[in-house]
Length: 128
Image (cartoon, rainbow, N blue to C red; front, side, top):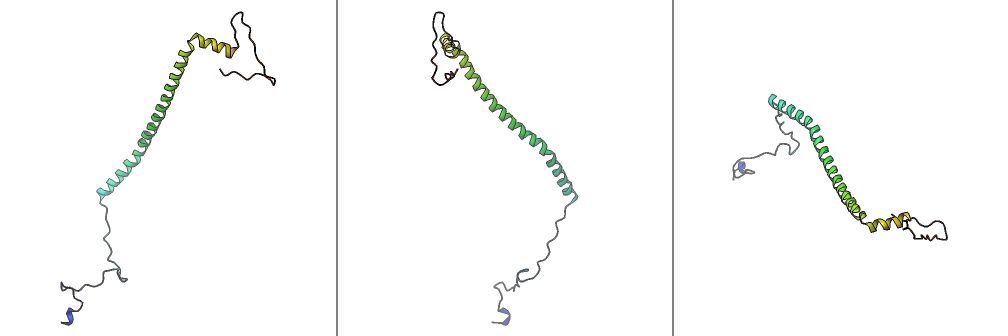
């Protein structure tokens, strides 16, 4: 073996330590330069992004408003159906008579109305 083959790699080249491995400064990287076209493109993209924020926000606000109004319309539709059923129920003469007797204390001609008053104060209000 010769003295030159000590530490030699099979390819025959001898490599030193990697730059920056033992306190050596790495070679400075080349600075990225911005061309004028790239600068104009960056400015245009920034302007478009800034002006796109307001319409996007308005769009999202309008979607939220529409969703809220649709929920309100559904609630009003349910209330309308409930009230329509109440109207149909009140068209029955027996229901009207029962309400007149219970809520208003009305009696037919010739009938005598009796009201039971509790010992302590007024009678409880009738739920009508």
